[in-house]
Amino acid sequence: LATGPRQNDSIFYEIRIYDIKPSKMKEFVELVNKYFYLRKAHSELVGFWSAELGAMNKVVHVWKYDNFAHRTAVRHALANDKDWQGKFISPALPLIEKQHNEVAYLVPWCQLGKPPKEGGVYEWVTFQMKPGGPALWGEAFQAAINAHINSGYTKLIGVFHTEYGLLNTVHVIWWNESPDHRAAGRHSAHEDAIVVAAVRDSVRFLDSQQNMLLIPLQCSPLK
Image (cartoon, rainbow, N blue to C red):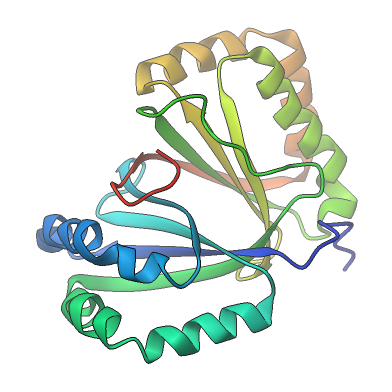
């Protein structure tokens, strides 16, 4: 099936989602805050968040790699980093119930953004699109995203399309000043004829969607 165009370079992003044991979430976050500088020394962390709404006891982190050889070299170095293995991995593994990862590219029309200031919240929206890739649904999906951007209530951080994992999955990261600011903006968008029309066109290609409200951890570059 056609996937359509993507970014011309080889840069990709690994999305890692962990389910933490409910009684161990506080302990896990404390470990991350204390020792994750060891992991960040090996490759670029885009963001690290804990779920506040839409999921519980879940963390999401995104890593940037130049290419697959770069990731392989980083994973090899991590396996041989005694500080990382001893101070973080060994105590962290018993706290984790499940791990999931995906490889994704930024869609060709999106650059990774940054929030205008620190202290807001992030909305992680996952869309499961119909098979066919951006060649089928890309233009309609882009129009829907742009309609929300143009409404002015939210800031786009990134749009990622999976390469490994469940295919035809798109993750969209938005930033808002607060959950209430996001709620007010959503109400306005629902009354915006341009947004409504763009969404109606794009949902023809949609199978399902879900979202989470995320809070950045102390170690996260995106705060």
